[in-house]
Length: 287
Image 1 (spheres, rainbow, N blue to C red):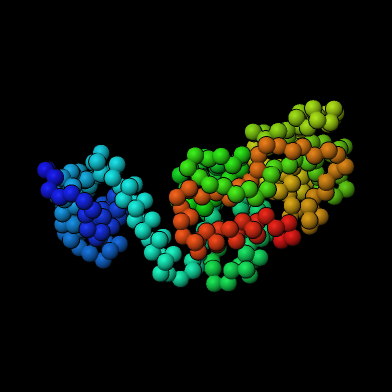
Image 2 (cartoon, rainbow, N blue to C red):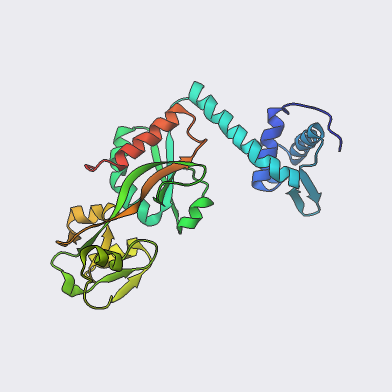
């Protein structure tokens, strides 16, 4: 297939190609645009002739992207998204929806207690949340605005700190060290790190070992023992009296909870203002 044109192909052809590549077929793209499958095939054929490259392999069971098609698709998607954002920023109305993803425990502890304040400050905007089962799943999550735990450095992403991670011994009201401890496995500092800071290790074996801070805090609320809990994630429980801080030193860490997004995503002023508004609410100690 020889190249016949130079420059930017017609936008209509690019939009149809993006839909077919994203949805995995000409029929699905046809349904999205209200076209016939033949019309989609013709537009993609025109685009391939323009570029002088085959973008899809046609087979009896459907189509698949060629190597060139796989390379071209993310470039087209990024360009179409940038054009849509810039058009909305210049000529459109304010965004009416903000979607944020994160671990279920982070959404529950950091976003939900402040959702009402955000909605009051931004009438007409709908706030949506998407829960990820594991932190690794956030890399594949389609929702671009995310809450992440770490040190604020993710390639290709900007980040605003919501709260630094500080760990402190806490338990249900009326319980103390004699209730035993809850062990939390994972990357966070644990009881041994706390012992190095204080010079004293809690006595006795942990009766419960979990791999989630959310689970550890729930267990502590149930009176199972003392947890070296996250102050940011336990703020609602502490405020409501379901957990109480023990008279013991706190353990600062190098990690924190961050509101993050792709570096090239917030080019629209209205969208950035909405994200900054959410960040302001999430960091407000009074909400």
